[in-house]
Length: 153
Image 1 (spheres, rainbow, N blue to C red):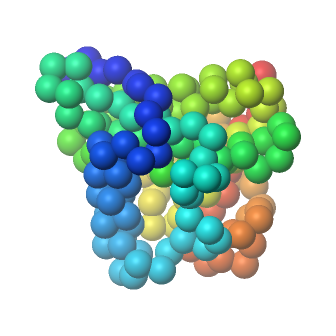
Image 2 (cartoon, rainbow, N blue to C red; image 1 turned 90 degrees about the horizontal axis):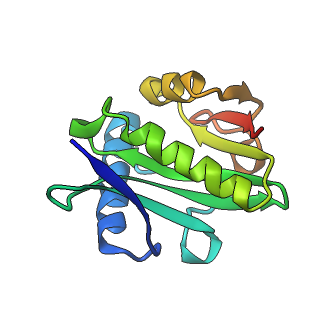
């Protein structure tokens, strides 16, 4: 399978489809729809939104976004790959695209939040060079949050 990563608006229908699927999966994993501390990402607080698309079918395979935290730091939001495309390199491609965009925006640090019911995500981020950090921002005090950070070099 070959795929392309495209920058799209937050309102893109394929992106919306992926975000809805992600939330449904997280609701199942956590047993509730109350698993996101702080304000959810929205068009007015997302700097960049990427969608991975299957080259042969045009089917959306995954997505990820950047939200500015500080002048030199961004947060990865809504990182998601459809289950049948996991392990194909789509997630790494999206993450690397987000990191490159962060570099181009003058950022030195990428942070993110995942959770204890997502051990696959935790392994992925650790494999990609992220290190666990104390909870930050809206995640402080959350029992459903595990935070990571990577310095861009």
